[in-house]
Image 1 (cartoon, rainbow, N blue to C red):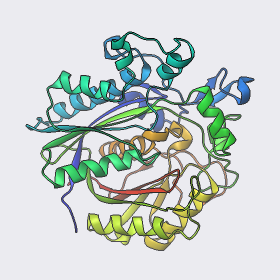
Image 2 (image 1 turned 135 degrees about the vertical axis):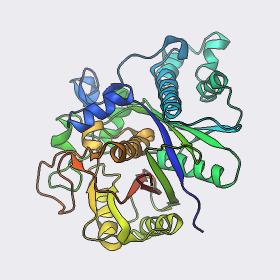
Image 3 (image 1 turned 120 degrees about the vertical axis):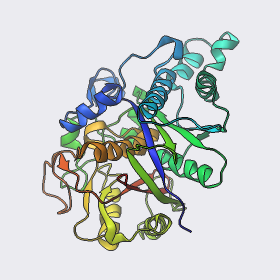
Image 4 (image 1 turned 180 degrees about the horizontal axis):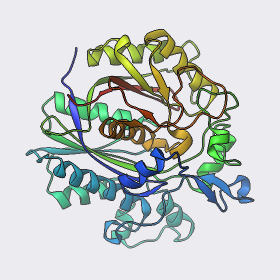
Length: 386
């Protein structure tokens, strides 16, 4: 069944580039790295590591941590931005928060430094419901509020859950936020032990999606806010549809048959009411790992035209884990609005479809894929506003 599209009507961002959408766009459009050398994040903390962490900032009134401040700042910027573009909230505004690991810094302090003892009010700040509740209170929204978690496919999962709410008439509008500020030394170390995160060299040297010599990805952090509505007069982009599935194969690896991955792409195109030949860009998951590169390149060759271009912004912004696909959807939407896809420069021989550096947008459909660890497949279909 083909569902109605909806618009991405406002965008907010907190990333390794800094606080605000302007910082994100300025960084990506000039091919600047969000990562920097951070002390104590290397193996056994014996050396600095390349990590795209969110810098300190935000409003202290939004909570005691970077996580809560970033979540509310991104949502607030998106709501303000949507208002400037003509959006007016409906009676039932829902809130979806895509999150895999929440207050990692505060929970670490709670168990290790505070011996599990906190005033009740401070303890409540650890709960994933608290920043959602305070945001709903701030704006007087009364629709449903819910967390979504689907590993690094969580951003796509949140968008498709919002679509289901809108299609079902549960809400008039959705504020969607995806937050992951979990790149602390312990998590970075374990992703390195998994053999997928690389911190010992600049990201463009290590993370080369669809190019020779790629070793994996650099870790990143982000919170991305979006206002999703069918009633906005000036959206950045339209979400036409999408699909989700699960490989049911392995806790980390993609099923090499690619059966469910390919089916997810096909179902997303059917849901959006478009043909593979209509797709102009594949905004890929593109983490720079061999299995993901192979999967997405194979599907692109099978389903899309030879003119479909591929890009991944992970070499620049980092792999932002639970917020990754939300960052990448926001980049596609901003690209439609500003006429540029801020693709990273290529640094080695690779796939002939790969975009090389910032590229003028020529219109057409964008497919955003996200393949979450453990078999979470997700595909969202986007278009420029009519």
